[in-house]
Length: 184
Image 1 (cartoon, rainbow, N blue to C red):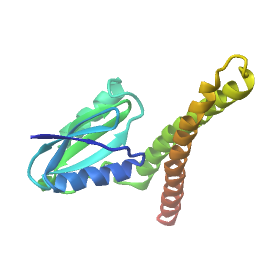
Image 2: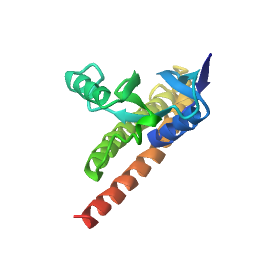
Image 3: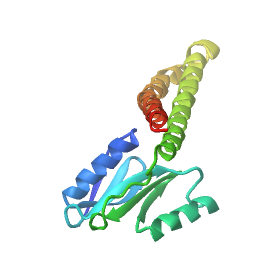
Image 4: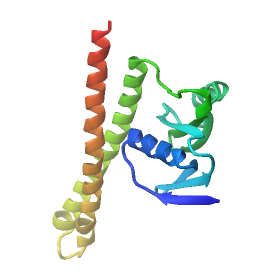
């Protein structure tokens, strides 16, 4: 039996945790699509361990295809892709499943994710400001384009939602960098 869940998660580690909690209940993740739709199928509890990754390029790019093939040769299965995000799973019986084994690769991934989330937040901030200014000041009441001003809070809200994980990722980068220096 298949089960759909709609969940908005900005932090990829929280998403991983949730997917693994679902897998521990016997609900195996099999697909993702917008708007924030996760598709699960019933399986054995704890059968899989899930990991997410933001690739440097789209999954169809030759470098990404080579990386995905490498992961599959290492025993991981590509479950789903969206934009540059990929979801992998591996049988729990095969042992621990970690994509990054050292701090430098974790730092690189956190930087990619921070830039991704930060740019999304900045873009929404710019769109929100444009809509606010256009709706109230540029078009003016004679054109009755207040609609733009009324939708600007949506963009501002998305920008604020993006700031929280962005700051969290920056903090994690700082902690990992400090930890790397200590171990050098």
